Image (cartoon, rainbow, N blue to C red):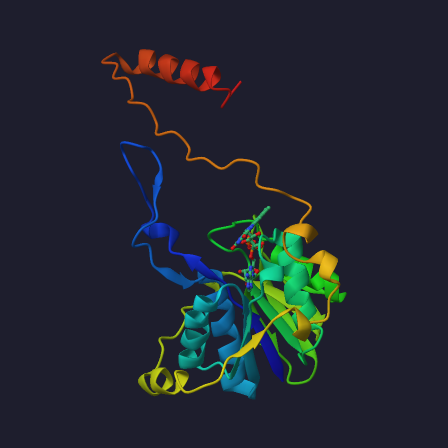
Length: 261
Ligand SMILES: Cc1cc2nc3c(=O)[nH]c(=O)nc-3n(C[C@H](O)[C@H](O)[C@H](O)COP(=O)(O)OP(=O)(O)OC[C@H]3O[C@@H](n4cnc5c(N)ncnc54)[C@H](O)[C@@H]3O)c2cc1C
C-alpha cells in the first residue's frame, strides 16, 4: 500500500502573544512546527504501515526551510519526502495551494492521500477536500479512526457535531484527519540520525502536472485585502446587587450585544 501524507509547516500559534502596547502579534521567537492535524494524519499512516506494511511519502509545499518537518516525518517513520518549492507557487490561496499539491500528486502512485483536517495558521480546512475534487477522488473529512480490510476497503470513523458516522470507502481516496485521532509517536533516536542522511526530492513547476495559470497569486481567486489584530477586550463592569437584579443586568447586556433576543 502507498500512502501520501500532506504536511504543512506552521507557526506554533499557541506561542504567539500580543504586544500589549501596540496590539500587534509578536512573531519573533515563535517556533515552526508540523501542523498538529497533519501529525495525526502521519501517525494514522504509520499505524497502517505497522499493521499492513506501507510506503509512506510526505509532501509539503513551502519554502526550503520546510525541509525540517520532512526530516521530522522521516524520524517518525516516513519513507520518502517531497518538497514543492518554486516562486511560481508563491502567494497561493487555498485553491492555488490545492492545485499545486494535486499537480504533484497526479505524478505519484498512491492508494490513500491523507491531509490534516485544518492548518492552525490558515485555518480554512479547504485544502484536503479541494485536492480530492481536483483528482476526482472520494473524500472523508474529520477522520478519527480507520480500519483497512487488507484489500481496497477502508472503514472510517468520521466525527460530526452530534457524534460520529461509520463510512466505507474504496481506495484510492482522500482522508482529512483530526489531531485528536491518536497520540503521535515520538521521533526515534535511530530515526533522527537516519533522517539527516535521507534525500528529499525538491520539485518545482517542471516536475508537476498542472496548468501554470492555476498556481500562485495568479491562480488565486481570493486576495487578502487587509489583516489586523482583533482589539483587546475592554475591562468588565462590577455590579454589587441582589441575584435577581444581576440576572436582569446580564440578560440586558446579552440582548444589547445581540447574543440573545
Ligand atoms: C491571497 C492569499 C495569498 C496568500 N499568500 C500566501 C503566501 O504568499 N505564503 C503563504 O505561506 N501562504 C499564503 N496564503 C495562505 C495560504 O493560502 C494557505 O496557507 C494555504 O492555502 C493553506 O490553507 P490553510 O492554511 O487554510 O490550510 P487548510 O485547508 O486548513 O489545511 C488542510 C490540510 O491541507 C494540507 N495542506 C495545507 N497547506 C499545505 C501545504 N502548503 N503543504 C502541504 N499540505 C498542505 C495539510 O494537510 C493541512 O492539514 C495566502 C492566502 C491567500 C488567501
